[in-house]
View 1 (cartoon, rainbow, N blue to C red):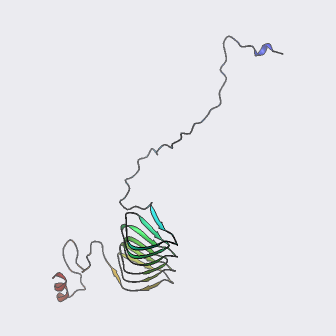
View 2 (view 1 turned 90 degrees about the vertical axis):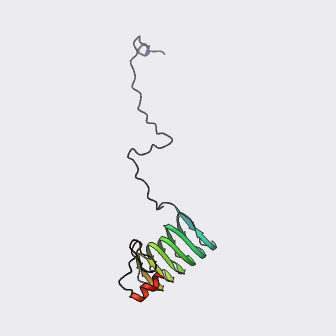
View 3 (view 1 turned 30 degrees about the vertical axis):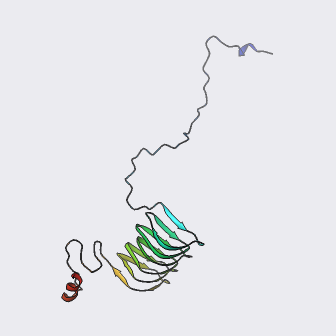
Length: 176
């Protein structure tokens, strides 16, 4: 039966509605401005899996993790090359940073640093600003520590001055 207390009144009283929160389908960007990203790409990294074999030249503009086999040359300036535990590389490597966990046979040129981890093996020469060789790592080759802006023959880019270790005859021969 219908009760008279439920009869509609001439002045309806607003009933409170429950608060509903709507989340947008696309998240809003943060309100703080993002700093300009550096030219070094640290977020994207390509990976060569265990079963992949590459023979030839590897170049690009992103970091690379190698768990397979590479023969030839690797040239990734401004990026990081990591040779994983299963990685076997017979190539010259040129990059900003090189980390060796597997086996590498070839020369390395790093604009920043080379790390040879405890289970890593490197046979070849290293040219870098910094080098780290952990206990248990295998290394056979030469090390050339370069200051920023130093050329291969020991001359500075800015002044053309030779390093203190060169004699007059060898410095003259290097300039010819």
